[in-house]
Length: 386
Image (tube, rainbow, N blue to C red; front, top):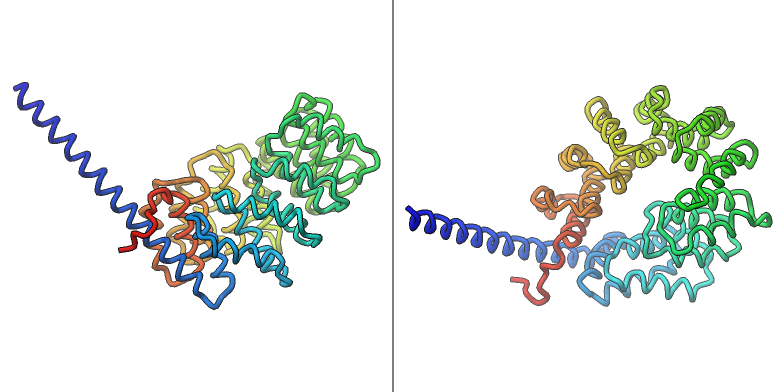
C-alpha cells in the first residue's frame, strides 16, 4: 500500500511538472506573438500605432523605438507630443523615465511640462515624486496645480515640511496653496490642514474649493459634512461634483444616487467626470456602484473607459468589470479593459486577452500586446522567434 501511494505521489508530481513546463512554453509563445504585433505596429503608416508599438518594444530594450518616442517629445502637433509623453510614462523599462528627465532638463517648451504634469496627476507614479517637487519651482500655475494633485496621493520624503512651505506661502496663488494643504492630509499636520481646508472651502475661489472638496472627503465628521453640504451649492459645477463624490464616500445616499444619476443621464462631460471620480469612493462602495451600473445601463464609450480607468487605483476585485469590458462590442471599452488588466497585473485574465492579439482594431491589438508584455515580458527570449 505504501508503495502504491508513493507511486501515485510521484506520478502527480511528474504531471504537475509537465503542466508547469507546458504553461511556461505557452507563455513564451504568447509573449513572442505580442512582440510580433508590436513590430507590425511600428511599421504602420499611422504615427499613433507606431507610438503604441514603440512603447511595447522599449520594454524589451529596443533602442530604435525609444528614439522614436524621444524624437516626438518635441512634435509641433500637441496631441502627438502628449501621446509620446504618455507612452513613455507607461513604460516600465527605466529608460522611459530617464529620457523624460533628460528632455525636461533641456527643453524650454512650456507645453511639454504642462502635459507632463497633467499626465502625472491623472496617473500618479511614486518614482516621479522628486521630479514633481522640483517642477513646483516653475512659474506656471498649471504645472504646480497638477504636480501637487499627484503629490497629494504620493509618498514623499519630508512631505510635511516641503508641502507646508508651499501651503503657507502667501505669495503663491490660492489654487497651489489649496492643493498643498490637500497633500498635507497624509502627514502629522492632518488636523491643522483640515481646519485650513474648511476655511478654503468658504472663500478661496473655485479651483481652490475643488481641491478642498476632494480633500475634505478624507475625514468624515460634522465639520467636513457641513462644509461639503455648502460646496454642493457652489456656483461652479466641478466643485459641486467634487463635493458630491466626497459625500457619497461618506455613505450619504442622496449623494450616491446623484452620482449614479449623472453617470447614467448626465449631459456633456459630466458623466465622464463622475465616472472617473468612482476611484475616490471606498473600495466596497466603488464595487457596488460599478456592478449596479454594469447591470442597469448602456454606458457610452467615454463613460465606460473613464470608469475602467478609475479602477486602476481601486483595491477591490475588478473581475466583474474586466469580464464585462473584454466581452464588449465597443473597441474603446475593450482596449481600456485590456489596459486595466496589465496595469493591475491581473495575470488571471491572460488567457482572456490573448485572442485580442488578432483583433480587427489596431488599438485593441496594440493594447493586448502591451498588457501581455507587462504581465509576462520576463518570459521573452530575444532572438527566439520561431
